[in-house]
Length: 181
Ligand SMILES: Nc1nc2c(ncn2[C@@H]2O[C@H](COP(=O)(O)OP(=O)(O)O)[C@@H](OP(=O)(O)OP(=O)(O)O)[C@H]2O)c(=O)[nH]1
Image (cartoon, rainbow, N blue to C red; front, side, top):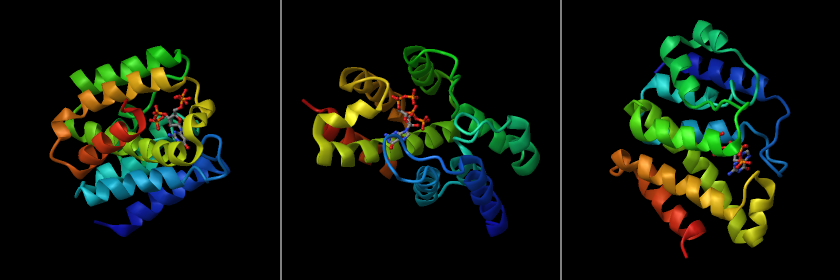
């Protein structure tokens, strides 16, 4: 795998996310796409998927145009990043329902792997913050525990084709830890 492409994607994501922080924390945003790329690397993912992992939030959260990604990293990477991007003009319920439906019905296997790495990274931080802060963890999000449980349960169902992966197994454990009754 050519290291220079990975370096280019790291640089692109670092510039795009700039000074952004993870919700309600002082953690640099870049930590999240790095973790997603690391999870995908551990699953033996191909280069285009690792590049997409590094770049996956640059359209949605950093106002980069898909054409820019296509020009620098190719069409396959741009399509994967688009698959991981929500339409922020829609309501939270519409966006999350659309994401779950897309993953359940239409997502190609690579897009499913990318989404699983992305949501697992988010669920890891929720689990860690839930452990230290308890129910106050939900205050940083647009919706509380009940709606987040509905969303993550939908994701869990959609990720069923990945049941042999380490990512899916960790997702199940953390779902139970955070949302189990
Ligand atoms: N768990 C967690 N999430 C954070 C953190 N910082 C930013 N996020 C983002 O917050 C989103 C969940 O927050 P909400 O308030 O429920 O929803 P919204 O930002 O999409 O409107 C996640 O989106 P998502 O749709 O679930 O995934 P994504 O594809 O946008 O990454 C994730 O991108 C953090 O420290 N922990």
